[in-house]
Image (cartoon, rainbow, N blue to C red):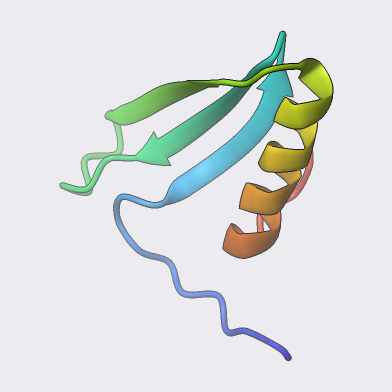
Length: 65
């Protein structure tokens, strides 16, 4: 099923795995281009972090950098 990509405020712009964490970069929900938020989600292993990061990228149609 094809999904339309809609640009919105406050959505993830980058998700990747690093040292057993999933790192999620999120645009500011206020729309200020100078603001962003970074979340570090702890995982049990690097492998688990990679699977979770890939799932986030899939859901939000983000590229893997």
